[in-house]
Length: 206
Image 1 (tube, one colour):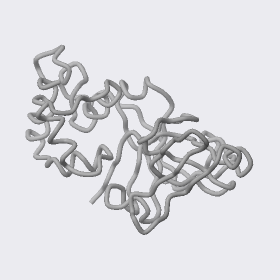
Image 2 (cartoon, rainbow, N blue to C red):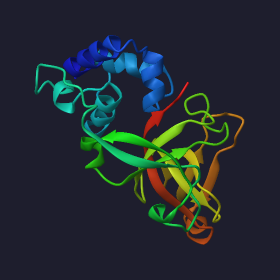
Image 3 (tube, helix red, strand yellow):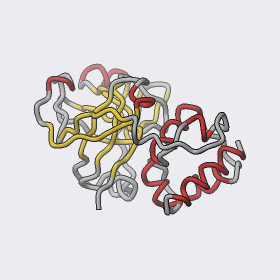
């Protein structure tokens, strides 16, 4: 993966983007994750390459070394709605609280249905801050370590990091001021607790 790390570094530097900025956009906790990827110390799962390509305005084919000329992906865009909130029990497509739109690549759009969500509160700082927009792939399950959008007790959706264990799940805030939210398998059914999407990208406006 050293070659893909080298291409990521070259594209990042050509955009004048720091490792901290790239880490923030991709939801990594700090720049060390980017540094390890760029040096080839850490591998990248193929699904994550799409997110790197999108943020770095290039193509997966270039990052993977399948084409030698870095191409922009900005011309290939799909518009998605940004929601101010997601209410429990209401299908995403039926929500009327559209506050903005964002554009994602056609390549990413082909991997599922997407929506944007404006974050409220400070539970996910410093990576995700109040007012940030996250791009979310609609899905009902996710893996440990993924940042998800979930509804609990029929309330509006919350953004947290998921941890699965044998008898339940934990929804974890990045902000240490917030305690983890633990739910047994029975509580997941009874409350209920529902995952409605996985965060795949962060958009921040200054």
